[in-house]
Length: 298
Image (cartoon, rainbow, N blue to C red; front, side, top):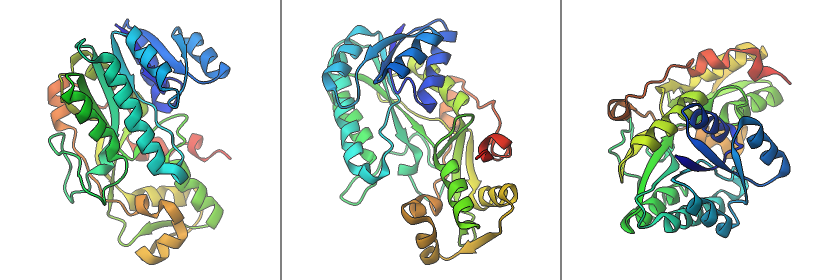
């Protein structure tokens, strides 16, 4: 297939591009900048200039392709709700370009939407209502385009997608611990983060695009739930700083806007994804991957 990939130069998307190319697909990658375009050309992908804010560029890219993987998201948490609404518009635009064609659209969501006190499964629908996490907009948009006959499916990624080049939640934790001289977990620290290596996630996107049916939901989860205190303990050991528990109130001051994620208990299963697609995580787990100098270089 010729696959249009948004986020093609990002942490996950760049791995998706290489995975698709290695499997014999062609890639048309979205690029905002000359540097991004050059990085796509270097790995053998074609370039489509545009951005998430330029909906017409997205429509044109999707119209050219045999399938679409939407792996981009604007990771500016100071404008999180607005960025979630941008994602809604992007998904609806991509879906409109594919309506009536049976060409697949694979979008990205998060397992963190499903904090159920038990491992969330692919059968669990995203919550609804006025108090839900704004990121639910992505799955709401998927439902809208599905109702228009688009063959849309969803990959839910966990809080930690780790590996070389990671600039997500774990590097944020390391930076906070380095700045404040302590590595903190909330309460007993047994709240759980699911995790996956970026290369395993990339392989999932590829096999999901090849095999997905309309309405499928997949979980890109290599580990169902890593206790947060284990993450904090490793960071403390690596930085040689104390590892301490704090109450939710103290942790809110310590972590700031990140406190919600530090206290989140959102285990998730990928058993149905594994059974449906034959996908298995084969890369190192979060703790083993984190226990490398790469994560602690200043």
